[in-house]
Length: 336
Image 1 (cartoon, helix red, strand yellow):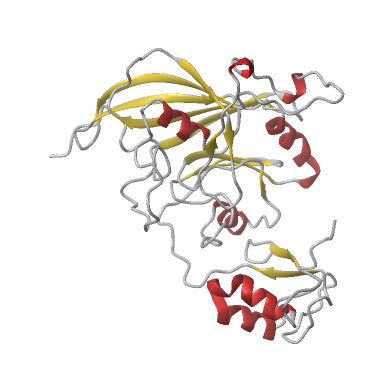
Image 2: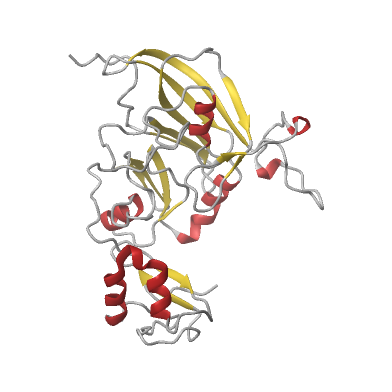
């Protein structure tokens, strides 16, 4: 593993890029321009001129450096005229090891795409002066609620293992239009896949003989030599109807508590769509809508409500609950 030659700057880690050793480009600069020039053509060249693009030793990579002369380069990601997210995160808990934040809708957990400074991680690093803060898990940009971060690299591993072994209990709430056909609690299972570069997850078929499996945390699964990947369902969510009523606009809506039993991308959103109760203001499921600017008055009605676990360092039971609510939840008075 190659260590980064640049420190965290303004809350942002340096990005590492692996370079091709040969190709149709004469210089590294030409390759980088072809790959990323559509994002910020002039800004990329300016960074080369300023010496802000470096190699593994921290030495600047020049505009004229030939392709093949370096295997990796590092640079700081930035976005010209980054759009502010007009909502503020709350810090629910901080100790020597953890920071627990309550994320607003629209704010990404980590830098991605056109958001760098406008991400929960970078905001918290700058706000708390903790350049090495790291998220232990993530929420979608559209989802609000609880996110846990590690402050201490020496104790980070045990907390990460909790999530890897599914030893963390999570609950979510969501609001959907209409009323469900059945108000009985149920578990939704299917098989989901995700293609790199495609924004939505996809359902994958599997044989009937492979269905109905009981999900176990990895630590409880027996290890078998030569064991092959399961071909059955790999995503499961518990869905409980809480109540139905009128939203703030007088629309008939229903509120649900969701408990993910697995951690597949977008699984709660997909499972609600499969029940015919797609989450309000979801632009991905059941139908992928055209890209459009954020409508801050119509946040995705999905909230990471709580997080519970047994602390691996102390053995104490920990529980964190979001203070946020869903704007379209039933029971509010309709607007005149």
